[in-house]
Image (tube, rainbow, N blue to C red; front, side, top):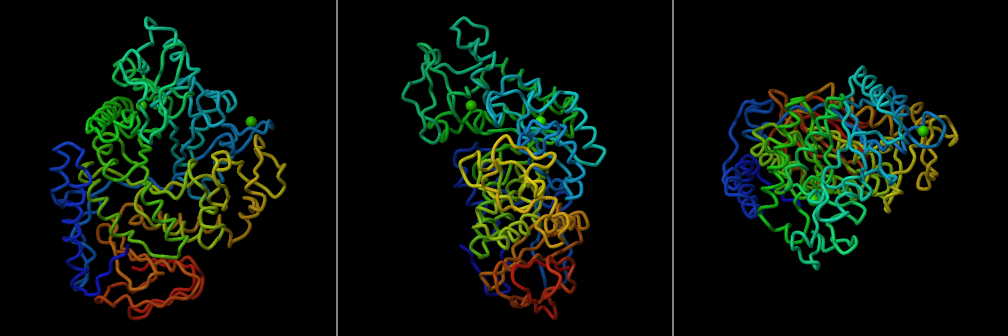
Length: 559
Ligand SMILES: [Ca+2]
Ligand SMILES: [Ca+2]
């Protein structure tokens, strides 16, 4: 997977070649997108005004000629499942006041933004099937509690966004109950009925799953499940209503929205996956939504779940969403940590960001993450090896953009599929009956997890490791805002990449392995890095004349 150029000339020429290749690859990868998109991708990026424009580098050394412009990072974010996080009233169910009570904890970790998983009323434990978009789940508290959470978060410099489930509702939502009454009901066309639209009952979903569900003598579309009927976005009333919902929460004080299943607005059937109209219609809808949100708050942060490759994500960043979660990157980082193998992170991201920058006119902000509520927890995914979990974190937290943590990741919580095991109670104290501990379900994957209270006291804990790495990003803004460039090292166990912003050029080097590694940074030409700016371990890192020594499982940032 990892290509290496042994000659310095190869590295220097690498960028323009990489750009050409990227354009060619994108052209073939995006054969379904519109002609304008194709044209955009074929054009090499210009040095536009931005925070990562042309870089002055010492003579004889160059990462890249240009870095694709991108928007500013707002810091490290934290995805939080309210039901499992912290309980304020002793009923064992996490709630909004419980989150408020832990804002000081999140501030100490260095969190600048919280993503609240669904907080609307819902019949399910997870809440992704909403019955009222304008209310708060009574299990979690009241609108007043939410207001207080927002006020207290803002006092601490923490932004709050919430999950907005736009693609579908609960099958118990009053709109759907009305729609199901019959062809003359007011909300009939708010959902997709196979018989009304002459859709074949043998139609399958994007991954070949059944998506048409019986209701009386009719069948409705529910892409995810029969409990989650898809809203019909061809109906202008639906579009207006969902814009109104988004505006309601921004006016309420939310700093933005995490948009669930963003690509499934129009990707409903197997036949929609390859239909160019799917991408065109998705983009048009999210641009309309963006305009609606801009009317209330131009700074609203919109981040979408587009669980797909970069060629699918790109169009969503065109005057629509600020960010798409980087699903491709999470796989690469976890694989590198787990297998102690350096993958092509720098070149892959450089190519990806060139494309995203073009699509977004330089405005996109990447959203890297390791895991979320839909995937195995990091610690479990890397074989319960804390060294691997730390290296995954060290890679994540030296990536451009807004890194997202999943609650409990910072204390090494475990959990493998099924979903319930990924969403277990946060472990606050050694005494599992302490104040705030949620008990709505057993934390059965986390019997051995060292609690937050214990980790706060231990300078070598996973929590304090995360805290240290997060603090680097605020000391050196280039880690958040800068571009990324590949740096070749002829050692499979050592991953390196450049981070570049304005006049700042950094080299991040990770030893992913259990053994000491010595690397010659000058192997392909002399490098200008003379100073250790940050290091993840207290001892064992040495830099002299381009010779770098790295102890096992360590990260260093050179300048
Ligand atoms: Ca409670
Ligand atoms: Ca849909």
